Length: 193
Image 1 (cartoon, rainbow, N blue to C red):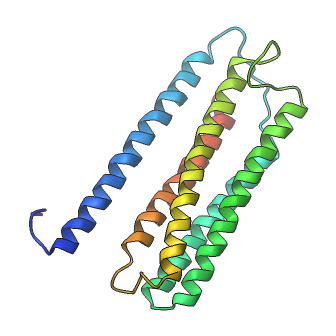
Image 2 (cartoon, one colour; image 1 turned 60 degrees about the horizontal axis):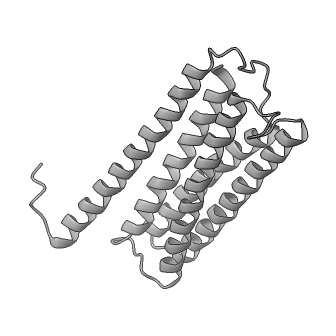
């Protein structure tokens, strides 16, 4: 495929998609580093093997999966020219994204209530990794929410059409990445170490 061919609009879309994928790959490398350090550290003598992750983390996983489905519905509605339904589904996605963050912080509260701390004399290296990995993911979800707000703003302004919805496509790709990343991280923390 010759990337130099096509209209200026097509080249611009390809460039934006490629930049997004470069960003996603770099994020994956960061999380791969943290999960690798988690595995290496699991051989330490002070590693806690009976840590039970909070139920809020499971609930938040279900929420973010449903939010990805809502984003798919929004994208499909916009592709069909149903602007009102597209906006509605984008707002549902936003609400679920905020609910995800709320349940994440609720999970942290559950961990602290059971005596698990991020730092200090009662902390543990495993707990520090769990807090770190979850918090860094929340930061990326916050970025996803900001991009979603931009998409919603552009949608309300009528920027997207069935022929031109690149912003929705880029936003949904990043959102689905965040969804799959949390499912992976949660499964990793449950089954490793």
